[in-house]
Structure formats: structure tokens, C-alpha cells
Image (cartoon, rainbow, N blue to C red):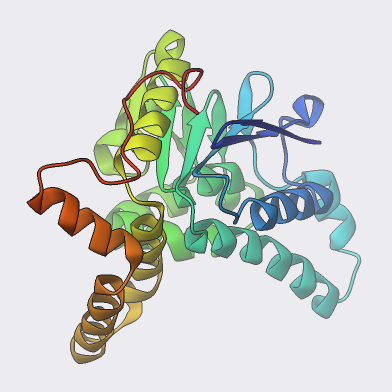
Length: 265
């Protein structure tokens, strides 16, 4: 259901339900949440999320959704919150998360790719939110997609429920980049290596905290929050080491020679 593979400081999580096009069942959501919680440690520096087979994920398991329709509203609310917690965990996770989108990402699957910090998508992939075409609503993914795209682009995707190509998704900012399918692995490996070798893990975690909390604040509240986080960051070991290294024209302690992920360690 979910495969994990850790090479040095890079953890790959693979959605492994190819017969269901990697649909997000309740059990798969639980497995993802457990894996993400475990990955918040000092060993993992980068997380890569991908899908088995020719599909990244088609979102909710419709067979499960049909069964849930016979339950009470409270029971449905608990299941909805279960998925919402996964998306929040990704947005707030202290490690950078890269979606390696190796095939179609639809509905909640598209939302899963969009909520990641980076989404590298194979050309030929289709993405979109088809919920309105089956009488459903893209409610949970909207919280994150509206932040990325703004209302006009989100309305176009959500209300029409149509699919777009990888290049168009990158152009509007839904995903980070579209690459030829045979270059997908290399592009993700290069980005992961950059994050591992060039950035401070502590600074990444604080910056993700900033990105998660700042958008909903008013101006005065946002500036106060930003000033407090700025002051907090100055006192961290990484900031002290990074500033000293810059002034002394040396490398900070986290910087190592760039290489392939196979060489990293």
C-alpha cells in the first residue's frame, strides 16, 4: 500500500495501489501520516512522494466514498478530517517534500501534488480537479490550491473540473516544473541533492512554518509574527554557523560537495 525507501538522508514514499490507480483510501492516508510522523527526525533531510505504475494518484477511493455515503454526517466528518490532517502534515512538515508526479494526478491526487513544497511532473501527465463532474466538491484541496493560484485560476479549475497538461500546470503555478518523462528521475534527484547539500535543515523547517502560518494574517499581525520568527532564527546554531561561515569565506557545516544521491552520505 505504501512503500518506503531511504537512501542516506532522502526518504522516498511510494503510493503502491496501482490496481486502484493509487487512490487515497483511509488506510493509505493513515500509512502516509505514520510515515511522515516518523520522518520528522534528524536523519531524513528530504522526502520524495511518488506513485507506483503509470499514475501518481486519482484522489479519493470512490468505492470507499460510496460506502461512506451510508454513514452518519459525523462519521463522514471524521473521515474528511483524516484526509485534511494529512494535507496539513505535508504543509507543516519540517522537511522539504518533493512530489515526483510520474503519471496522472487527479482530484485529491492533484491536491496531494500541489500541497508538496515542490512538484516535478512528467510531460504527458494530466492534472486537475474533476470533483464537480461527479457531483462532489474539491473542499480540502481548495484550502491549499487557493493559496497557490489565487481565486481566478482556482475557479477555472474547480468549477469546470477539466484536466490540464503538465506544462500548463507549471505555467499557472499549480506545480513547480514539467520535464520530459525520461528526465523525471534525474530532475528530482538533482533537486533533492541541492536541498540536502546547500540548505540548512533548521532554516527549511522555520521557513515552512512561516509559509504555513503567514498567509492568513492581517498586516500588523503578520509583521509581528515575522519579527518574532526573525529574532528566533538569529539564535539558532545554524544561523550562527552560516553567518560565521559567510564572513570567514568558508562553507557552513551542512554544505558538502554536490554529487548524485547515490554518492551522498
